[in-house]
Length: 468
Image 1 (tube, helix red, strand yellow):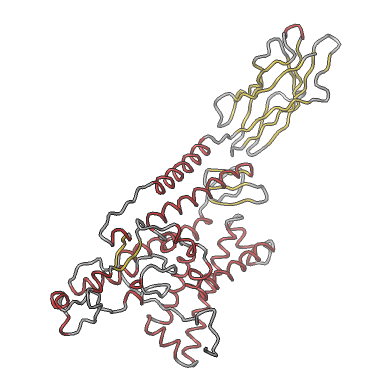
Image 2: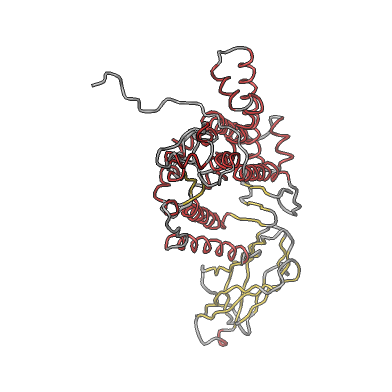
């Protein structure tokens, strides 16, 4: 029995992916630029509002409102967030069932920021070979300079990331001035520097280790991917042949010579391993560390093109397809995920399109339920609540419908006038001769008749009139 302890965690090895060109790398770059453009520019887009910050997207926690372009989201609209989270979940399940961890490879924040940090590293330290050589060489002036400069720009990007996140929660031009003059709320500094720290650690120091050891998605992907899921796959039948892979030595440079010798198409160049951001060898089969970014496909295609051979030695393929079977994209599971995704989208669209800009309720004051006046008429009191959720002023006349012979008064209030984003509570007294009612409870409606504002249709508020 060995006297040496068994290591619990494998030795950490720095991974420096090689730069590669190709369609999947191009797609990743486009997504990267678009994501950064949206994230960093969005807080600075002006948007005029009569009420609220003149900013396209701002989350006003003080007023408990989220402004997203022309949409205002209130605290009571929290079910929209629940629907959005449900949509994100089923969309993730749906995409995973079809194309595996494509979200990780192209859209995940960890992937996007790690790619940017690696670009900074490459600009300062050089290509993969130079970075590996720099890591191995002893500490000297060159190494200290390049490493310090790299970490400085990493921290700068991480700080910019944290500060930008803070700017979503206030008016950006004012908040950024307050931030750098020490006048911003303490929570702004805590949030900005906290996010800066986590971004620097995750994208700069841990990098692929987040995907390998921290992210739970890697652990449960096996239950979401089946034999019909498209994933980057190495074709061992073509790549290995009968005698395995071999270098393209003089006697094995052409396909004909390789096939006669029983050697596969894989020239064992190792480029697919060198470009992998998590450092795996796709030729060893599916591995949980694989984020399925497709860079190994670009690498292999580059070699195949250079040798004039057909592409596809490494390609997006299902397990069934690799075994010469048929890939079944549409089956019960994908139909279920697809219908759930469409249902969540439909609910959000329906809910937002039917969003009321005027909320109104009528609460009957029940202490007492009614009062008998000296002239024999019955008095009921109501508290009318009207909430103007639009950014424009609104005015309404009030009428009763379904209560013939009744009179009402609102005291000194002649009509209901609401400023943008204003709420009002109005006491309404309704009087009626009891002889005109055959029941103790008569249903009727308050009617708000628009005079000014965005609302053009009458608003009906259900209530009831109680008699002895």
